[in-house]
Length: 138
Image (cartoon, rainbow, N blue to C red; front, side, top):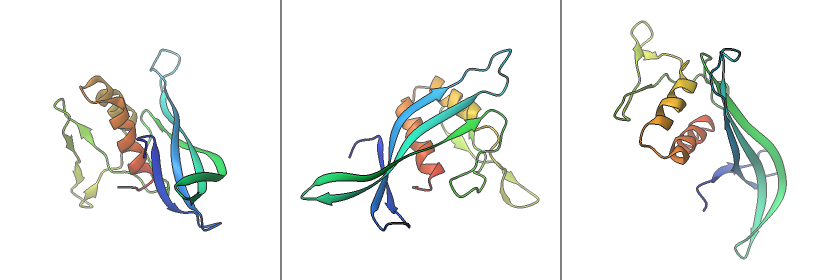
């Protein structure tokens, strides 16, 4: 399986296997006229059948998501993702709200992508982790 293909269970509408195929990623830079840049992940959501190891795509739709600077990041079901703090060594801390004993909502997703891209971590790995987390594949 290619690193750009993510098996995504069974389609609830037609009962076929489905997968996500990473298509493209656009990273906007923060500028004087764009104070809320985004990282936009473009995917294809496909259903398919397999016959003798040959895959035939049945449906192919646009999918994907974006992470905007300063905005709360949600998963595919609309649940807020936990806030992560990326350390300079690449380790991740998840701060906990002492009042609720739950992680804070992630409002630093864009900043995390930019920080991870500046570390010695392959960008494909950063995208892979984000896609799996957004679509609850982890």
